[in-house]
Amino acid sequence: MPRAGNKTKRTVKRPASPKPQASIGSTDRRAAAAAIEPEGWKGALRQYVRLYNQAEIDRYAPAFETLLQDPDHMARYGAKLARLKEAELLRGAIPGKSETKVEIERVSESASGREVVVLLKLHISRTVEQLGRTYAEYRAERERIWLSRDGGEYRITRIEPSLSERRPRYALRSPSGTEADGFFEEDVDGAAFATGSKPFINYDVLSGFKPSRGIRYRRDLAAEYADRWWNEANPAYENFEVNCTNYVSQCLFAGQAPMNYTGKRDSGWWYKGRVGGRESWSYSWAVSNALQIYLGAPRRVGLRAMAVESASELALGDVIMYDWSGDGRFQHSTIVTAFDASGMPLVNANTVPSRHRYWDYKDSYAWTEQTRYRFFHIADEF
Image (cartoon, rainbow, N blue to C red; front, side, top):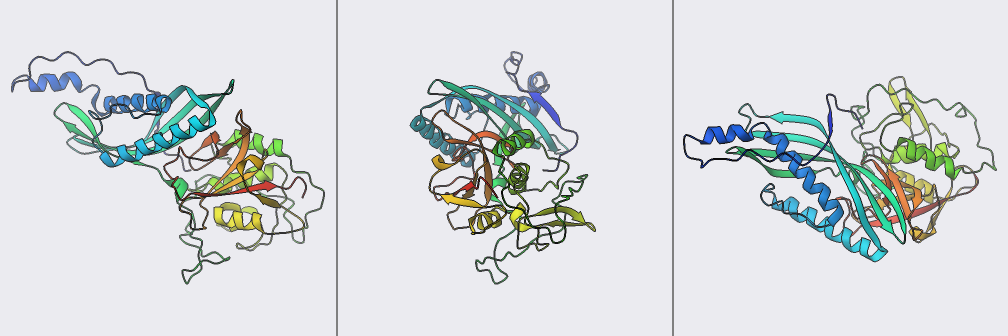
């Protein structure tokens, strides 16, 4: 994702107790507000993040009522915690330690200072204990938070979590609006690309290049690459606003999966950077639905995969695709990078950066009861 400037990164600690107040009559109100003012809206954010971090351990929404005045978000957040707690009980996983750091990416404040809108990036690291083993998982989520000052204190009036995992970079439909194997390009204006990326040139992508047979898929290298670049962009590639499939394709390529260069956006699986100021890559490289169609198609050479029935059949370096609405259009891609104590996949992803996250994504706001998955076991040889 594009990096915002002037970020402030801090570890949130319990805020200091405010100075005791005298009875607040008309003459004392300003003095009481002044005693609280040094904390201001940042103090309210500290309190919010502290409660959020505790909820990551308890899997139960703490008493936000005095701070948060957004019943819609509380219902959404409470539902996520409830399904996550149930899922962890079923797999015998016990939450351990949790640490949440906050990065303030953007602040908009009214002239009076009474209304503030903050774009936050929450860096969450937590440990999970399961069957005598402990492993760590990481993710980085964005939330937009509205705060309003009431007297001397700020309250959170609205929270919008990022749903970028649910939002594809391109709409995968024909111009007539019906589903098709072809792809209808929308909004290709380059504004969603990060600035400063250096184009990546694959010297094997030459006119007439044909991938040779017998190339072994290096699952270890794919997983190592995924762990190296899960939380930052490799400057050798373009960085998309919705980057999950671009990231997974990079991981597959790092595992020595050969590109199928056709020079056509709607065929093959390839990446060439920018040519003449325009992006040059296939839909299958950067769009979830296109990649799942490509992996699901039979072929004799090049990147190949077999669709399997369950996550338990996957190996290191395999791929999972996510259809949040159950309508057959896949919007998110992850790659298997580790396994829990029961042998179930833990995955890495981008857009919402994630490392060793449990594969079912029930901890995501994008998840719905209609969510469907496709599991792809990448061929051992190409």
